[in-house]
Amino acid sequence: MSRSRSPLLTLLICALVAAALVAFVVVGLAGSSGHEGRPAPAFPHEQLSGETVTLAALRGHPVLVTFWASWCGPCALEAPALERFARTLNGRAALVGVNWSDPSLANARAFVKRYRWTFPTMRDPEGTVGAEYGLTGLPTTFVIDSAGTLRATLRGPQTQRTLERALEAVDS
Figure 1 (tube, rainbow, N blue to C red):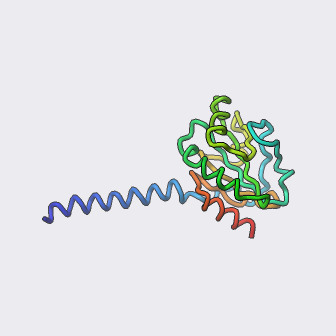
Figure 2 (cartoon, rainbow, N blue to C red; figure 1 turned 180 degrees about the horizontal axis):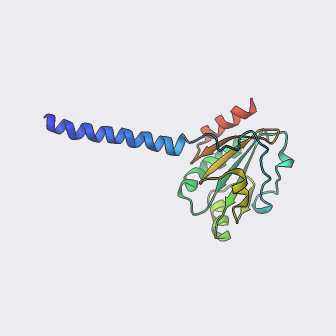
Figure 3 (cartoon, rainbow, N blue to C red; figure 1 turned 90 degrees about the vertical axis):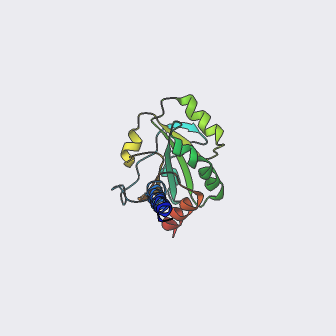
């Protein structure tokens, strides 16, 4: 009997370690990018979908800027939560998508259509705006306060709840 418990115990420990690692990598990487506390860079000028928007026009409201790409699997996992979150904002904040270094404009447009995004989405084909934000991977959401200052970096796919918490932290 102890032989059957030993492999089972080992399997259980491995599963717990794997779950903790996944939680840390996927959910728990909200943290500093080294850019917090400085003015947020301007959005890209190229519009992909939705209305044209600038960071200056959004001053006075918190903004969440999410960088994504059509080829990014975790971005696809996050996409429905982003739209659900955007629909709850009702003018108290803004969500802006930035398609980052996507080689296919058609695939980027198809991604937005597939997930029925209604929030404005800009395009950063060369990745220059992402570099200014300190982007290190996808998806990444940057949280900007109402004064236009970067306050937090959320790495990995977010849920509607984690986005709401991030907004509450800068909106209070």
